[in-house]
Length: 155
Image (cartoon, rainbow, N blue to C red):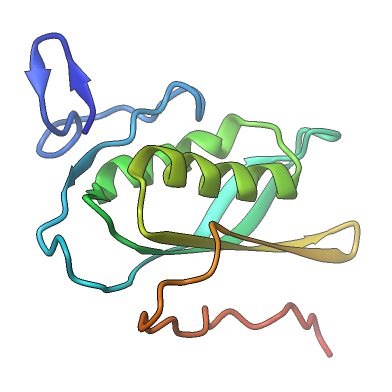
């Protein structure tokens, strides 16, 4: 859970919050898992994710799908939304952005399992899909397909 010297608990929940200036400045809030000990999957989809191309500075767009099996905590959705929004002015290659989001969430939240799919729209005529997961899913966890079709263009 994120803490400040004067406050414990979520920093964003029920508060007005500005979009962080960068992913590094973004604070992710974690709250106790209300179903601790239960094996279940949580999915977040960000179909309008944006970051900047590190070469041209132009916007890159992706559909991100994040699946995780909670451990002791869950990520608070408003703080996740602000974290993802902070990439709007962040330059990074598709691979670095996608894997970096997954690794940061895994390192901070400590879920039982996490995967992220980054389905990037074409740049230079080539769509780039990036996938990362923390390891094999726990036995017995239902892991549905992420449901995002590969880019087909006009084909």
